[in-house]
Image 1 (cartoon, rainbow, N blue to C red):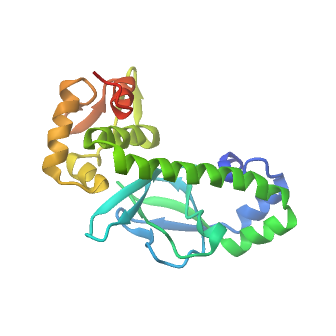
Image 2 (spheres, helix red, strand yellow; image 1 turned 90 degrees about the vertical axis):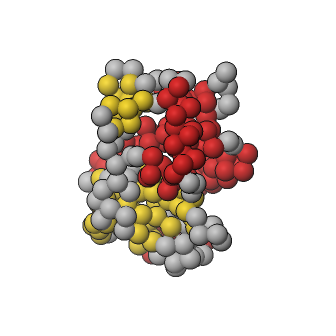
Length: 229
């Protein structure tokens, strides 16, 4: 457990006693596929460290559509913004594609550690500021990117979180389908189908049986950045 905690960016640089303190206060929680860890507007009471599985962070628009903001995998965390401002959750988070095992750390326990080791707050502030920048980039992507670029970005995130490398190819998990992609993008299935066909035509996406495959991540990255011809 201590080794896993030491690898979490938020806690890198903490000494062994601090990691032991955190490890003793982590509460194991299991979330079934599709189950919410927390909902948009809930009171933020702590941080979730992901030990196994994938968590999807999303917001619901006034029109009722879900927009995926981030995908987090093992070794990452969600719910960190509540540690800073104490305001209600700005987004929802759910287990995606299967069961998810997490460790829950109550914010009061973390605040106690920071009172004992205030230098640790500097590390956490740097990490959380990167998260804020990432959130800004995601909002910019939603505002200015084409649906093809947004789909390419989502596929790249899936490669990073759960992709299985096989030579130059990356095999996506079995739960990734055109339907799940359309849900995560907050757009119609028919639209995702059309865009996926265009990605197949340019060699950025393929199928192996029922599984989706990324033949070349560099091609997909060029599409995401709008550099493909």
